[in-house]
Amino acid sequence: METKIDKLWQLFKQPSTHKGIIAIIGAIGIAINPANIAAIGAITTLAYGVYQIIRDEDKQIKSAK
Image 1 (spheres, helix red, strand yellow):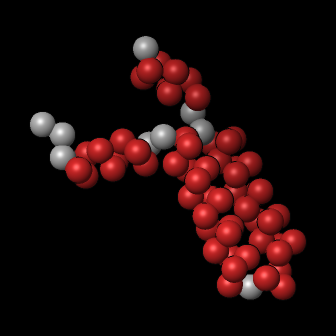
Image 2 (image 1 turned 90 degrees about the vertical axis):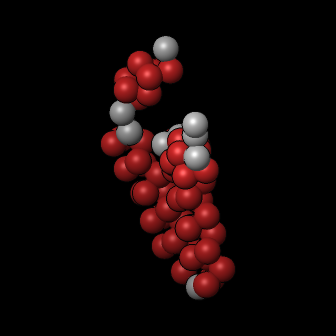
C-alpha cells in the first residue's frame, strides 16, 4: 500500500518537478529583489543547465520500460 509520502517521493523523482522547483525559486528571487532580475535569471538558467547535464536520462528510460 502506497502512502502519501511514497506518492510525494515519486513526484520529486520526476524531471518536471525539478524544473518546476527551479522556476519557483527563480520567481521568488525576482519577487524579493526585483533590482537583480538579470542576475536571478542567469542563476536560474545556470541551475537548469546544470540539472540537465547531471540528470541521467538512460536510467529514466530503463525504469519506464
